Image 1 (cartoon, protein in one colour):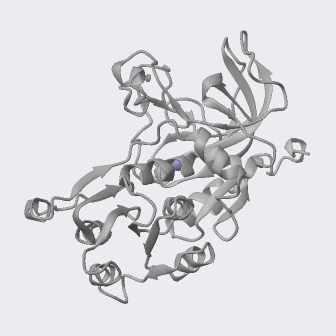
Image 2: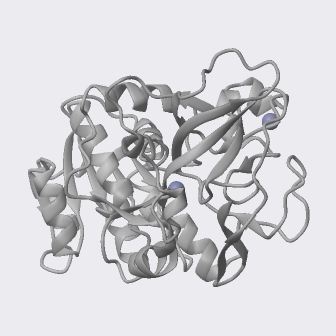
Length: 356
Ligand SMILES: [Zn+2]
Ligand SMILES: [Zn+2]
């Protein structure tokens, strides 16, 4: 089968790989869509970061590994003992494989499992014609949720978890710094929950996309003093919570300083440089500074919200063919072109692989 194999920094090869067979408790999936995200770029340009040159302790997988962790597809084969799925089921795949036995797994904080293996980094991923996953990681999509929507469930589950970390309620205000795919997902999640959003992004295209999704307050950080503007919009107090979905010292600082006393500042972006945090800036406002580690138990909620129409994809999601993974996907995202780019895995140069 065709697959995109990561060998190391800037070395992703579209080549042949053996087709996997499902073991006991596993389902085999014909991949339909797989999104490319910021952590893929980080791995490609700066890695190996999450992938390994020695066997992963849980999966035994090391580079080269098939990339891709935001995938949807169709169940095509069932391993021994699998009863909850049928051939033809459409599923979204949760990429976090865990030990199931440690303290964190038992406490429903499996995103902190020390043996966490992420599909597409520590286990064969979704940039391939087929993949095999544990049945508990496959989430069936209800009628009305398409395979393309299914590939968005993973990044939206990160957005969902990010909003949970904000600890806000309806009527409160959250400042979202960065209107990329996670920022967009965060905005839509806030909107669904009745929370006001102030969206900040220097890109006119991204600001326009968020406005089209319904954002009422959208700021250009190059055209105004963001912190002053956020204070103006919140009765002088600052946002109840702020999110750094941008990465970079400027966004981080605006996140911290635009948050009100006793509020919460949440980092979800990957930073390429360390940031300096003056401890005094935490001391006096007593702001809670926290982060986001993937998501936990978010898939069913996000799938239900997708089914009720909370996550429109128009204006921020586009698809590319399999052969375009590097040039049309990774390289364009690096240049900040496009927002969410999803690989239509069945569409590529080999006509034999074209889906119905
Ligand atoms: Zn991702
Ligand atoms: Zn565990």
